[in-house]
Image (cartoon, rainbow, N blue to C red; front, side, top):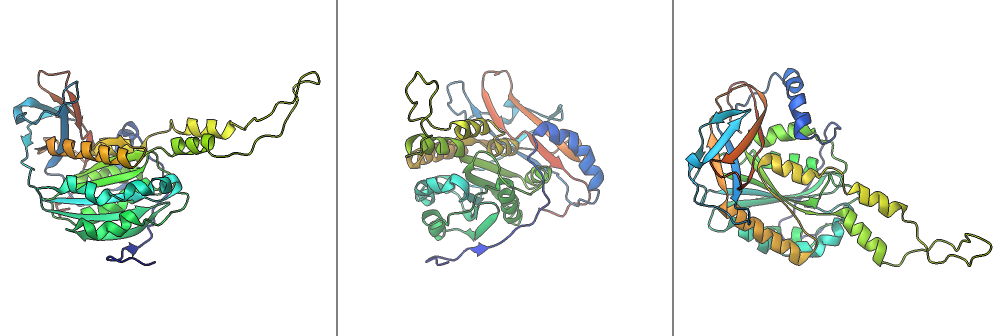
Length: 352
């Protein structure tokens, strides 16, 4: 392939087959996974909890103090600190889906470089990118200059029929865990809503996100909606005329609606992107075109600037899955979006 800017790596990943699991299932699996993986060598000494607080009308509240936050870890109250992150260095990995119906959104990707500037303003930063379809395909290494990724945004290679979201997230974690622990580690996932073809172990993804304090922000399109729009607007092959009764005229211009119905039902399956974003403390924004993507990225950037990063040292050192719950003291009507879990591991600390 030919690219005018620094060329990305093409790579393959190999994982064991699995399916995406919800947080409740992960709770049930945690004891089993601990028994199967007794030699994990990292320790969670400080847990970071990204949090966005909004009024019922959607306004952000950037003036809260540490004493305003009530955070529990497996139901036990924790002492939290509000980190100063305004000028904290940022390491960002962009995951760009190119498989299945993503090709319809390639025109929307062209201004991603400009839009990503919203997330990096006023702070030192490095940005990397991975394109993926049924597996991660191309990787651009970290660069402080977003323009170095321009070819990936403007000339993505059409992928195959897969959308291995979790495999792509796993590859992004591999990149981010090598970044300094003082950096704010972020994945910007631009994909369809649900996973299609990943082999990465879901529970392992959640564990690694928590161990490495990574936040995922999602911008998602619906492949079902795109397919349905095409199905009902593009020229289609009609069913042949058929006769309900010898006394009635032929029935003309009918179509087979079985597939659109199946596609619509498929849209109600688990939203993988939003689920993994919520687990990490990030948000998920749907988009349906270029201007919509730009608008949603602008909202994301505003939320990003107004969000908090809380930290705490867990009072419980029990390894495994920990459920987090955050609320604001005395203000039950506020909307709280925050990390809902982390994964504590046992053994001597070796760093990220």
